[in-house]
Image 1 (tube, rainbow, N blue to C red):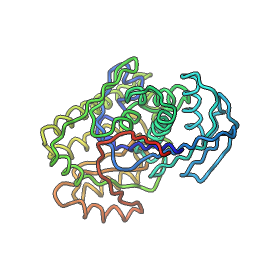
Image 2: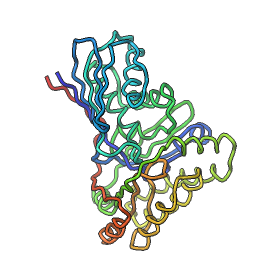
Image 3: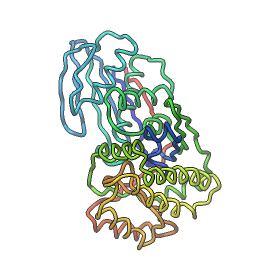
Image 4: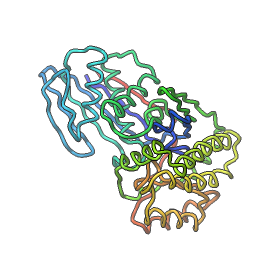
Length: 341
């Protein structure tokens, strides 16, 4: 028997950072994101030899553990161990024996929510195999608990919900971990135009998002008004962009992305750098009307809104910086699981 699962990565269109505690607990957060056809994939094959064999496809690494009720949480296997430990404890299960293989279709740490999406994919595979009674909100919240509480990994809440639900969503965050996912009913031709005009560019760099996020958290805790005011503006950006998409007013999109770009850089240092600033300026000079660093910042993917017929020109200019253009399409599906007998 083989159990498969896949969960889509996301691009964060607006409001990123306002889903991170303590900001979301104090002020309430809001983000707008869209899942794309790039995936985190998990395969589980049950065995009966008393071992747990983990293979990380992205790193070409494998490790075999003895089957126990609690695995040691050691890098780079901490995400799989964290999911396993959480499930065994929560559902009071006996030790399991299996092979598990994971991979992500982009480099980890590139700003598309890779770690959280992988956790959702792993969790989905276990839920499929063990027939766990988990709905979408349950899986997303459990993925959040595993990353942020059990493994103490810095970050927000949006990625787990985006990967689980899929589609273009306006997601609201409140205190006590309350989350509301609002799927947006965007007119098909507006969705197609948005997809056509967005240029996703990989800088061929990766970054440690935890350092940026920890500074953002500290800025809220110490009442840094510049950082907090910038986060208020990012939440406003998400609300305005939601209205623009629902009304089919894409002319405002570039302006709203640029508004977010200016404010995002105020919430913590190292969100941008000289290379990213130069790439952004070049894209604007050749026809883009706005853009965004995907994820916490510091590297990885950027995307730009290129209206009319400017996308090809912008693409050619950005390739001079040594990165690559990443084709994508929006996906309406979130986490998908299945079993092969």
